[in-house]
Image (spheres, one colour):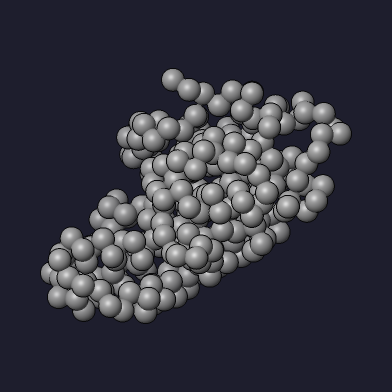
Length: 262
């Protein structure tokens, strides 16, 4: 089975972090707000199906609302002509809720601070940029991953999409100025891992915020998706990667010397 070996770590220039469920435990609270909008969307389109927040989370983790709503409507055989307005409504509801409930996590902050001394930090997400802004501010991560380092499959691409489409990872790598092989992706969900792997990024699965009862199954699914390692904590990821980065020559050219962007 492939592993994240030193030869793959040494050329790294960037750490490409999924946001929801990876940098902060936003999946569960997000679906509390999203389920209400999703159910009203279904009712407005004459679909009888309804979701609890937990049912929606289990069915759609890793996808954004645009993709979820379109897939649910297609499965029911109904057309959608006002998707953008529903996307905006869901975005507003979820952002407001997450901004209220999320808090800083010392382990995440410590890991990003340590790794950020050697790698350009970026967030690569299916979520909208406004939602990410609320989450990063609530968790005090704005200085570590400022808005310029956030890439959204919903907002940053010419045509909105969602993971597992690799487009958002390819876009992030192009904007940062690296090849996919130089960007270490960290993902908690299977669609996210597939997105990164398909883009050509070495990828680590992260179980830090995955519910304990779901971790064994998720780990197996992440391996199947093609990750090169699975960690249970951000500290474990730091221990895996940082020693190799610290052994690199101090004179080695780095994106950090040019502000993290090319």
